[in-house]
Structures are given as structure tokens and as C-alpha cells.
Length: 193
Image (cartoon, rainbow, N blue to C red):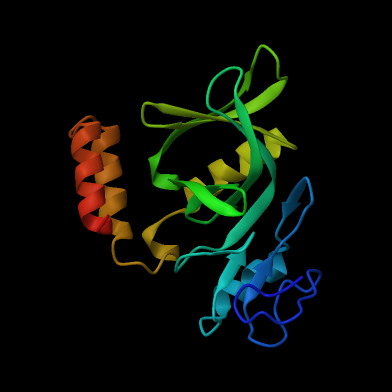
């Protein structure tokens, strides 16, 4: 395996490139929780060139927590294979080695287990009106960790300046003071997207 940052040979058991210092996670495990000592090291290492999960460079403040194989269902019968990973700020779906879905934890309104006609148990992630369906190994653990990360996502442990404003907006949305559309518009303005 090669480090996605510097291209040097990389030992996946070490989680860190010996040459450039990047943290790299390329696991093919069905389900994998990042060890606590590695999470701590990433949190404390501000001069690292970056953190890569399945070849994708994570944004500032994103620390990986869990990853594994996942099928994503666009309808009851149509699904695509890929991978799913959870960070302290987002839930990402990877298809063909490229992140093609990113859900901010502040946008998740509900998580639950569900059933499909042809597929046994899966997890449902509610993002406003949209429901994302994933079939994963260890679904209950995924739900537990997503809820825990969502509850821990506060301005105190995230050094991005926009976090406090997003939390305040989310609280206004939850109280019904602003609409989903107003929240989305304001969030995009704050994030510059």
C-alpha cells in the first residue's frame, strides 16, 4: 500500500506514514473502530500533513472514529456497495474510492434501525426530510457511535469558528423558530458553500 500524501510504502497496521507523518486508514475490515490512543494522537498532533481515510483527505477538525463496508440504498431495491466512515463532525459514504456523500452531524435529526423487504436489518440516518439507508456490519454499534459523536459535537471540542453559530442555528430549527429552508441557506452562508 502507498501513502496517499507522499506515495511512500505504508504499513496499514501503524495508521501513520513513517515518512511524511500523515495518518492513513485503508482498512478492508467489515467494521473497524479507530483505537482510542490513535484518536488521541490525531487530536494532539496539529502539525500532521493530514488524515486520510480510504484515500480521502479529511477536513480540519475531522477525526475518524469508525469505518467499514456498507451498502447504500437509493430505494427499497436498489443499492450500491461502498464504505462508510464516521468522524467527530461528519458521516461519509465512499463509492469507488471517492467520498460521494457527506452528512454533517448537526444535520442528522434521527437515527434508527430499519427493515427492508429483501435486506435484513439496516440503519436509517435522517437528514432533515431525507432518509439515508445503509446496510452495515454492526448496525447497533454504528447507531450508538453516531449518536455519541453527534452529542459530543460542541464548540468546546471543535476549534472551527463557525461551529458555535451552526449549533445556535440548529437549536433555533429544533425549536421551530426558523424553517428547514432558512437553516439550510444560513448554514451554506456560514460554511461558504
